Length: 434
Image 1 (cartoon, rainbow, N blue to C red):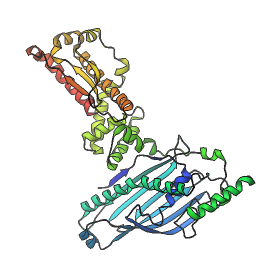
Image 2 (image 1 turned 90 degrees about the horizontal axis):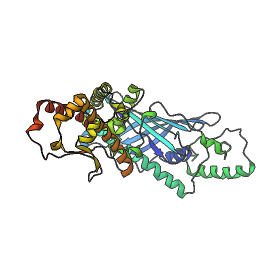
Image 3 (image 1 turned 135 degrees about the vertical axis):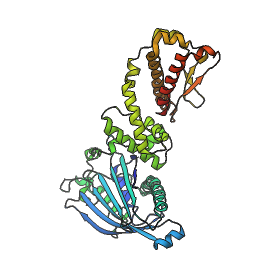
């Protein structure tokens, strides 16, 4: 079975050029990633105008595996080939990597992309996807899959910290800004040219450790830099996948702590729903509840979500908050309503079931009316959860129902009433599962 990983969008609040300078410091070795032993440059080419650079590296990784497994496979290191395609004109870096070791038994493919934030040209986005297909591995397929995913998750978690670390190192050395690339033949004022040469000379000495010459890795000459402010306003369009991805900071703030694989499953389900719906997409907290209900199995969550979406369409639930008019008899006699929140900040609904005149309510509004009332309450609950999340600074993914049974007696066991209550419980359980 092929294991897939899709990351949410990671945002660095630094310009693309500074992030690239920090990224290049990961090579040829990176103590912050112990499994990354080193690399050698296989090829390194630049376009004539210096706007594009393609670098291919062979990376050496230490195998973190039990001693017995290491003896069986007979190696201490595995090798990956990484191809970096840097486009400084459009301010993007595309990375593709695949395993060279055991390629006939295991297929690992990874794609990463750095690009300018679409709404803030001084920020940089990062997205990542990978797949793992273990076809055969000496009978240790399951063990290798677990080891590989564990190691991969650990490396992903360190990724942002490493970029932040090297940006801090650059700042300590006085590098806080790098101008965007400009056309080589673009004129640069003489009084600014000297400063740019000084910046470039400094970067030659400190920027890129992946080459013996120490040249800065953006692949541009000193004349390529200018102080043109408008150049920093250029931002590439989002890829088709990144439109459906989530920011890691957003996830922690509004959805809570998730593992890397849980984040990946959420991104996958969100993209599938967006492609399917072509319109209104359920909230991320809703998608997360479906995933949790199915142990983060995307296929099972999709099936459950599809059934729920069809049910909601049948009962026109998406329109109920705007179109439902509460009957006067409900306003006067229905013993239930929203009342602040519980001790954990969740919206609280109080229902004095023992004081409810079930027979009278059914005669007044009918079964369909009671169903509409229940749906309206549940939709209000979802809306209040979102409001609570925004105001309280933490994820609120459920609401509380407090039922007061004082006064409950045999008259509440009227058969039509029990039937309707059962239907209401069914409707509520659908909403709760969302």
